[in-house]
Amino acid sequence: MLRGLFKDFLERPGETYERVVQLYGPVGSGKTSTTYRFGVNYQAEASKRGVPLSFIHVNCKLEGGSRFILYQTILQRLAPELATRGHSSGEILRLIVHYLRAEGKYLLLALDDVDYLVRRSKEEEREGGVVYDLTRLSELYLGEYQNVIGVIFIARDPGFLELLDPSERSSLGNIVVRLPSYDSRQLRDILGARVDEAFKPGTVDEETISYVADLAASRKENSGDCRFALDVMLTSGLIADAEGARKVSIEHVRRAVGEEFWGLSSEDLLNLDEQGVAILMGAIQALQHRRTPYVSIKEVYDFYLVSCEAQGIRSLSYNGVLERVRDLSLRGIVDYREDRGLSIAGASLEDLSRMLRGLERRKALA
Ligand SMILES: Nc1ncnc2c1ncn2[C@@H]1O[C@H](COP(=O)(O)OP(=O)(O)O)[C@@H](O)[C@H]1O
Ligand SMILES: [Mg+2]
View 1 (cartoon, rainbow, N blue to C red):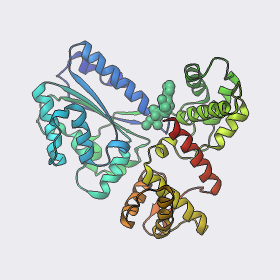
View 2 (cartoon, protein in one colour):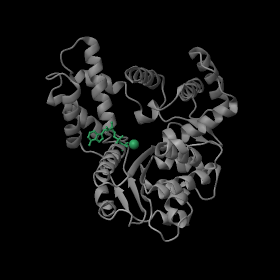
View 3 (spheres, protein in one colour):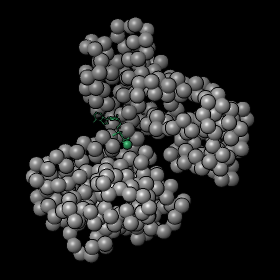
View 4 (tube, rainbow, N blue to C red):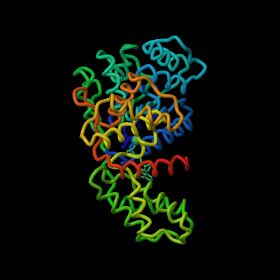
């Protein structure tokens, strides 16, 4: 699909206009891995034809929290020698475009989890924004062919479009690719292939693989999440290993599921830094203590301070925590409302201890 959309550039390099693609799909449907694989292959194919094209994939949640950081990240990847301090985001963007033009190079850009970036930046600046910038590069060089051959905007769903103003939305165009979530059979195939790579032969039966695939496919939330399936498989293996069992049993799988997170994507939790974890712990403890659906940030802050002390980390100011709570909310990890405070769907003592056990296990692996 993506290949077809960008085929013409390989046939007529330098004679195409920027192509904007929106890619949507639920958690764990393979958006990141599919795009990444496509981009890397595409770059290699261009290179085989002697066309200098860079594919740059930016994960906005990790390295694109604002327009400025995003453009800096792109420039850093594209031409680290040009990356300097003291430029505004607009200047960096112009620097990127001029560089490509002067060097006769091409760029294919993928902005992953771009909805996060749009939500964040719309809080800070109403005007313009990343989508506006990146879809209107041709206006910097009116009517000429483009060195940025395409931008792929990746998000779970088109919900963030509502935050864009109408002109920005229309500049996204109407090329939309949708990835469906994996069904049980597809998950079985993926798990099977991964198990062959990662487990000793004969330690995981077909039946066990099917069980994990079915569990992942029929989950209430994020059904078909491939990452969940792989996480459960891996954790089951670790549990079996720790017991000295020769095979991964259905019972190991059940216990592994018990350690999984409540409805959240493990990717989001794994990406939290120690401050994020401490704030989340503070929030959970405040909720448990108060036994109300919502708690105030002041209450979260008190528990957060305890949690920082227990873990020996430096604590942020109250406003610092408030800002991070807003960010956790944008990431979908907690629910924060100005008027009511903070809430987490389904937080219980049990959930907490499971989550922590799971997180520690994964961190130890990483
Ligand atoms: N077709 C596939 N074959 C093998 N592994 C896959 C496949 N699709 C997804 N995965 C794995 O599943 C996990 C989630 O995929 P990812 O691309 O990160 O999903 P998304 O970006 O849609 O949330 C990753 O660990 C990825 O390697
Ligand atoms: Mg992804």
